[in-house]
Amino acid sequence: MQDNSVAVRKEVSGRGKFLAFGIIGLALIISIFIEKFGAPESARNIPYILAAAVVLAIAIPLAFYRRPIR
Image (cartoon, rainbow, N blue to C red; front, side):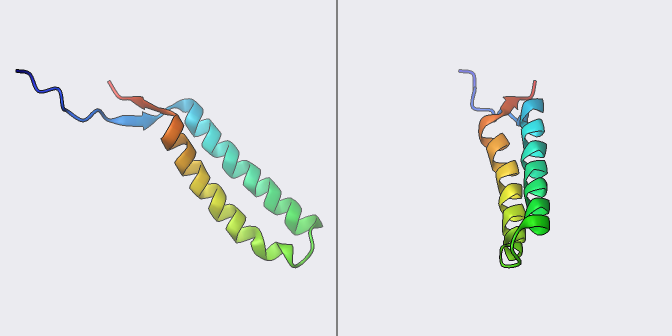
């Protein structure tokens, strides 16, 4: 019998990479607007917004935009 249990390597597609850069860019724009127009109390949330954007930019493309490598 032939063994078909070889792990298939997968990588994030171009659309997934574009989505990741879009998420990071949107978070940067939001943080700039918070810094410029927001209250001083809301400016302390900027690192958390950027950290959440990095986590989402990694997790969403890995979950939904993966394709097998040939």
